[in-house]
Length: 196
Image 1 (cartoon, rainbow, N blue to C red):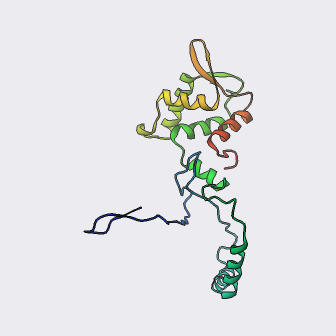
Image 2: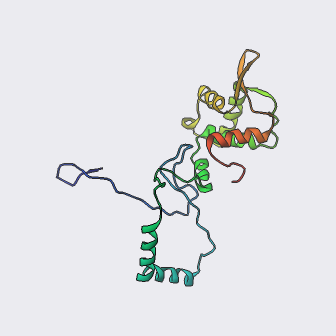
Image 3: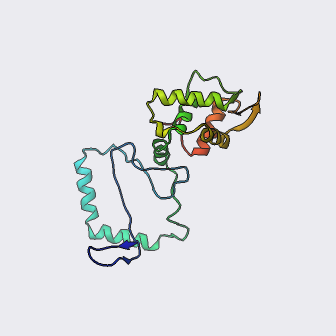
């Protein structure tokens, strides 16, 4: 990494930076389907206000016996198959992907879960889907800068579902049921919209 001190030339140093962040915010990190930078976990709230537990934990962390036992365990633990780039696929990471969605991704998640939706087992034109997307953006007061073009939405949908042409129009077939459509979306985006 580059180090630049005031009034002194830049120098390069090895980067050993590791950052641990804690937040109470629902949206913590910008996560994508190919996320490889962040390990995201949810912390249990069962110990909130349990001073005795945390006092004992703090005491144990400062104990030389506990530190020695921890070091001994770490020295014999087999980490030959560990790679820091193998980010665990946690439910918390999947939730961060949902919070990081662009407008067309959020629209599709809502669209697939809408109870009144009867598009399953039917072909739907990209034009009709884009009109639905625009109405969704209007109802959510999405900024015009965040609304994607019809081409981008069409390409996005074609990556997830079967693209077909009918009546001289392109469109998609979402699948035989809501379950299969949601499953295709969740697999593509690596999220769990039904568990949030």
